[in-house]
Length: 263
Image (tube, rainbow, N blue to C red; front, side, top):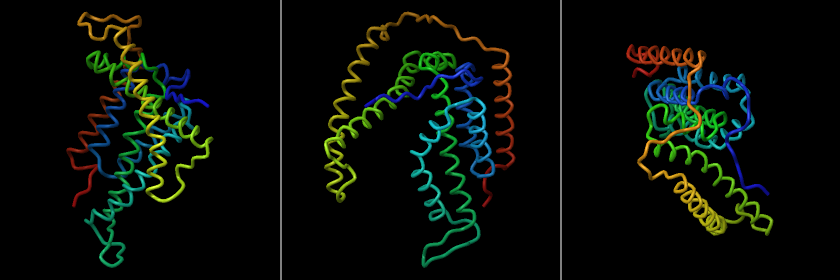
């Protein structure tokens, strides 16, 4: 029974060879686009574009789908709740005092794509970037060393904690415990048998991580050096120029009133 779950997977495509600073910039650009646009016709193409790039970049698509499935409930709630709460536009359905409009449905679809865009972009980054390269990339875009290390560690050990939790659930099931059995109170009690060992394991991981950080003298104020120095390739520079042009176009469209609903 394995309790480890690594996001990064080995590969040799252009996405794996790309400078981590370029990939981090791409994630930030996707975040900017997702915040600026509120129309599904402007958000959906970027979601499918990311999927297409992942396929061309030979990213393990099963891993992407597996991680996106965990968001299915949140996406479904967003798609359902926004039309029920957001009522500009023409009414298209009514049941008593509950009604939905065409703009409400479109806005719900847009918010669902916003969530997907803001999740699949960092997932693609983590699947194609090793932890040490991620730290170098974060430092390369100007983040302080401690902040870059903390952020990379958070990305690295969150899947590990998830793996530990899955291992504990499997161990409890082998002992005859079904966590989904019974009513609400019984399920809460069942999950207590999961949370206790998970908290102990998480504290153990945190203690080991603290010792590892101290052994690397992270508290030192001296200037740190690295074995590898990041250098942009010719293709990396072209990609950065492309992202710069994309940001200019996106901001220009938004300033002209495109990409959002006009009520």
